[in-house]
Length: 58
Image (cartoon, rainbow, N blue to C red; front, side):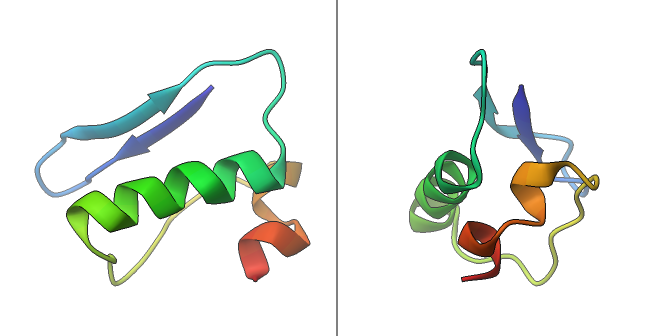
C-alpha cells in the first residue's frame, strides 16, 4: 500500500493498493501527484526498498 498524505492538511493525495509496488510504480504515482498538486518541498518516507531504489533517486 502506498499512501501519500499531506502532513499539513492531513489530506490523502494518493492511495495505491497492489500485491507489489516497485520503485518505478511508486515514482510514477508520485509524479502523478506532483502533476496535479505541485512539487512539495520535502518528502518523508519509510525505508521500504521501493523508496531507496534508483527509480526514486532519479
